[in-house]
Length: 200
Image 1 (cartoon, rainbow, N blue to C red):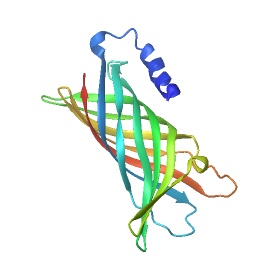
Image 2 (cartoon, rainbow, N blue to C red):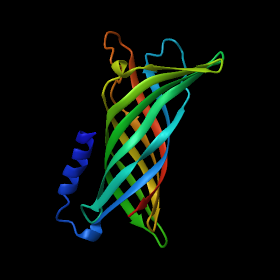
Image 3 (cartoon, rainbow, N blue to C red):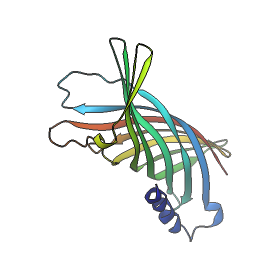
Image 4 (cartoon, one colour):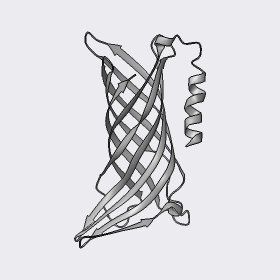
C-alpha cells in the first residue's frame, strides 16, 4: 500500500512545473466484472464473471498540449465465479491497483470525451475462495497460493461533464498469478470496470 501511494506521489512530483489549473484530483467508484483465464484449460471448466467493487482516487495533469497523465490508486476486487451442481463458488482477489495512464481528450460543446491506456500495477490485499452449498458458506484463505503482485494493461475511455466523470475500461492481466510454478498451468486476471466519479 505504501509503495502504491509512493508511485503516485513520485509522478505528481514531476508535475511541479504545471500550473494549478492543469492539475486536477478526484475520486471514483463503481463495479468490476471480473474473471480469470486458465491455460491450458484441460478440464474444460468455464468460469463465470464475478462482480466486485472498484474505488479510489486519481489525479490528472496536462503534460503536453495533446497529452494528459493520470495516475490512480484504487481498491479493486477481482476474481471469478463458478456454479456447478448446486455449488456456488467464488474466487475473491482483492488488490491495491495503481494504473499509470496516458490520456488524450477532446472537448465538445457540453462534455469532454477521452481515451486512456497504460500499465496497471497491483499488490494483493487478500485472496480466498468462498463456497456456498446447502445454505452454508465456507471461506478458505488462498494468500499463499496467489502471487503478491500482478501487472496488467488498462485501456478505456470516458466522458466528463463539468466536475462529473463516467469511466469504462478493460484491464488485461499479464502475469501468471498462480504461485505454484511446478506445472504448466497459468492463471491470469481479466476485469471490465464501469465507474462514476467527481473532481474536487
